[in-house]
Amino acid sequence: MLKVLLAGLGVRGRHWAQVIERSERAELLAYVDPSADELARAAAEFGERPAFASVMAALDSLDDVGALVLANPPMGREGIVRAASARKLPMLIEKPLALSLAEAATILRIVENAGIPLMVGLNFRYLAVTQATKRLLARQTVGNPEFARFTYERWRDGRRPDLNDYPLTMAHPMLWEQTIHHFDLMRYVYGQEPLRLQCQTWNPSWSMYAGDSNVSALIDFDGGLRVNYQGTWQGNWAAPGFEWRTDCTDGIISQQDEFGALYYARRDDAELTAVPLPPHERWISETRALFAAFVAHVVDGAALQCSGRDHLMSLAMLEACIQSSASGGGAAIDEVLPEI
Image 1 (spheres, rainbow, N blue to C red):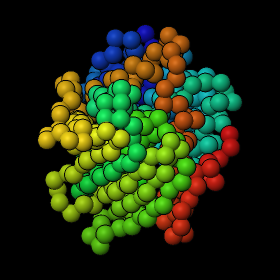
Image 2: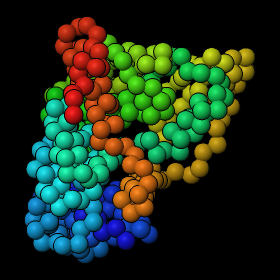
Image 3: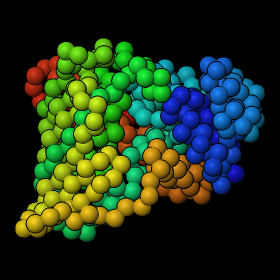
């Protein structure tokens, strides 16, 4: 059994507690959160365990930690990563790794110099719909992808008590908290790397966010694919909107819900063909699969998935967006990607 220290008991942290507590290959050893209320809530929900206000305090008190799952907000993680690296602890850290490309590169250097694995919590890769889309493309069900449109529209009320509130004051909340998932999915599903993008970010007049909640980008990939992306956290209708349509040489693939609703059609088909997907427990099914991949690496020596180094490329796309929006011109990925 892999003994796991869970740090961060907010919305996402409680998903992690549920997944680890249910796991047959891991033990939820202890909780970490600066809030006494959150620690008490976790104990009531998932059982009494040692509880600490900081990772450092937990590591000073516990001798048998086998891994760290870090689900706290992405600010100021360097000290935690250094402490865990000194203990040679494998780490699974929620996305984004940091709120700047430079800080993420620093964290990656720390763990790589320590020779320990770092997996990033990119749970959307593990959705059944994501895996099914990859299979459609691998089998060339409708040919090779040439262009795509990815649209995400959401009214995210950052004042709701069941949502993290720190994005309200971030410089680019949509980019760092939501678009990071979408850009990572593009790289993962298409198996192509970004070369260049043109982007604008902005805020509508009614936005509750201090930083830009709208992102529009045109992305060129190294396999010749072009993706038109539009995402917002302040779409002014509470009903969510989502479509990821990929136009291929013989037809299209269309995902019409972020957790499912996958279809394809060949050029002359009168209707879309639905792709069967298994039942899905939102936020849990894909997190369970992500955690299983982490345990398989740490315990069984399976290949590391969602590595920190791989994540750096997706973060470079965010940095390129910020630079492009500020300059009004395009931004090349190789000009922003740091050397490690």
